[in-house]
Length: 406
Ligand code: NZQ
Ligand code: ZN
Image 1 (spheres, helix red, strand yellow):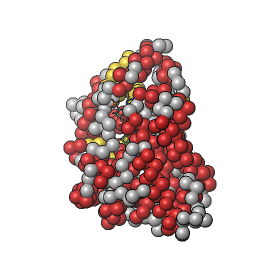
Image 2 (image 1 turned 45 degrees about the vertical axis):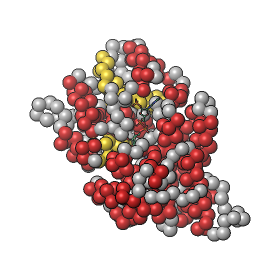
Image 3 (image 1 turned 30 degrees about the vertical axis):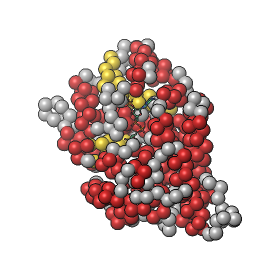
Image 4 (image 1 turned 135 degrees about the vertical axis):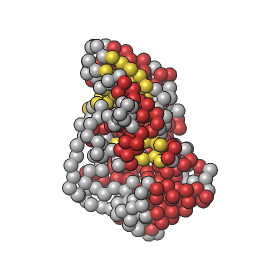
């Protein structure tokens, strides 16, 4: 295991009906900006609950900003940041999924980057984004009410912002962006369309894989934990598809997705975010849902890098899929690894997710523009060994054109 520091200050408030805790969690004299997405929070009644809780206990001034898009748009977020400044907001309350949470973190970080006329500077905010926001040293306080289990944004300090004009979808991270608290009410996930539920399971699955499927460093806690999270998702994905109203299933999915990307399983181990970085380009060029880009790319990443990931792939096959070279129909380690990758693809397919570019109605002509964008965004040394250059990414994408028959 490598040396590490683990720090996570987010208070998690988990359970049905917990939105009412906002009356205690948000400072009673705060000037609050509620941020939300395209309308689901209003439609489902979540916003009404939030407003009611904030009106209880104290003298808060409450403002609202709606319209943060899935894959939150840079330009929209700057408008929210102006509202923060115009109204002297000192607490942002994000109500929604990963996009609203990420976007609100970005707003919290960049609202102090002003022009002489007091508006938030596009140039400075863009500079901040391309430098991962790591040089920013102040942020507005932020809390979250999560309505979709997927990204882990509720318990981490990162986010992803999309800047369509520049065809760039870029990650950022800064410890100041940790939410002060996140409310996780599993009942809030019952209104999600099935597609979003399945997306969430896939996103969490791939988060675990990118922190687990590298090379062994004898990190027993992280490995066992990661394998358990994967097995839970493999069990609960089909379960929620079959019985969407089962609250116990919803609870387990929600907590699993949070644990998949709150830093715990990634502490002290190598990580490989190749799938995410290629996936971001697919979203930005072709507007494919985040999780769907991942299920398209991951199987090809595993196949292309199977030599450098061999030990972990064998461990994955054995501990997650209960496969073994002793099995009658598995001749050798190569066959074992291929079987585990196919099991992974079958799992994604069962949830209705694409596993190839063809499944997303793209062909080999999609590859060049993606590689060009990877280069433009300096994604030229990806992977746990920093060896995945543009040629490796190209080969991964070539493998992803057609899916293998299951
Ligand atoms: O916009 P509204 O109307 O709210 O609708 C949303 C949206 O259309 C809807 N929705 C959310 N909660 C709902 C609901 N509909 C009905 N009932 C509810 N309870 O779901 C749609 C998708 O929402 P979105 O927030 O985009 O989904 P998700 O949580 O999957 O977030 C995806 C974003 O997170 C980023 C992705 O890149 C993407 O931009 N990620 C953030 C990460 C992080 N912060 O650590 C890591 C991830 O790898 C990921 O990259
Ligand atoms: Zn993700």
